[in-house]
Image 1 (cartoon, rainbow, N blue to C red):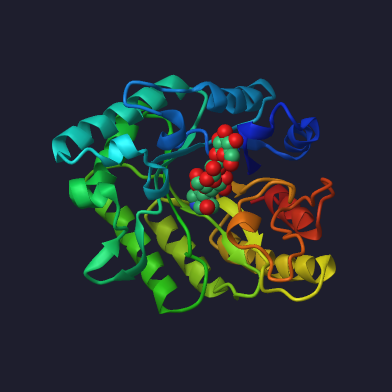
Image 2: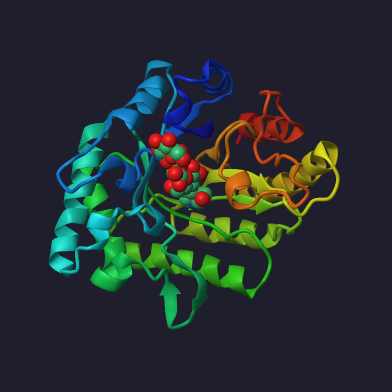
Length: 321
Ligand code: G3I
């Protein structure tokens, strides 16, 4: 089973040690941002593949695998696309987007996050899905339309529904897991293939993992013929008092519990971290530590030294199934 990490093209030229870290440690490297519509398509007529190509080519030329992230994301939709208000027009553009991108990468990118974060942040029975331009303009059918287009564009690619907050304890998380399962069933009932559910794994070092619920979620998916895949693992440590030792100990414990839950139903399709080194992460930008000290969200520290939870991942992914 591959261990992988998301890479940012921004640092490919400026930081050779960054590139080396991926080649030293990863079986899978994927573009973190470069395949988001907002990055790929500055306007309706342009497909700017070059930054993503650099990462995909790096992976493939080194015998590694990769993934595609992502065709539909509320946070990655360009303004020109959000301005499309005619449902038929948006559907045509969505299908054209998926066909063009998956055609470009056919044979090189074997797994795609077709939709990302389509579950409502705080779902209610009447509003299970994310309030996005997609939902407002096309309704819930944007999800099957996207999966169908992806299936047609590259019949061999594995198609994944990716989301966050699927691993903690409490009614909100129970509800999010139930909605993910219901989306899988709805696709299957409509005769549309879905191969995986991505559990992002943006963990909070102080929030316990619901190991049993994650295990049951994996079992439910398995019964539907769908595999879990860990897509964006990292640890938010803004509420952990102390220094690096305390931060890393708390991260280790939460990653261990998370992996216990995920692996309970069998090995996931991959374990992917959202970056590889503390040198570059979204977390200090969005959730900096209150004491102003550096966050330590990723398996290698800012000097590329592996932490104990890096070893934990290696042990899990190398274990025979
Ligand atoms: O590409 C430009 C670069 O040219 C410019 O010099 C630089 C200056 O700030 O900005 C660069 O764009 C940034 C981009 O990352 C690439 O580094 C954007 O400003 C920044 O907003 C963007 O942030 C990303 C964010 O998604 C929004 O796309 C984060 O790196 C990325 O980690 C984050 O990833 C998301 C997942 O896709 C979905 N799940 C949650 C996760 C964390 O928010």
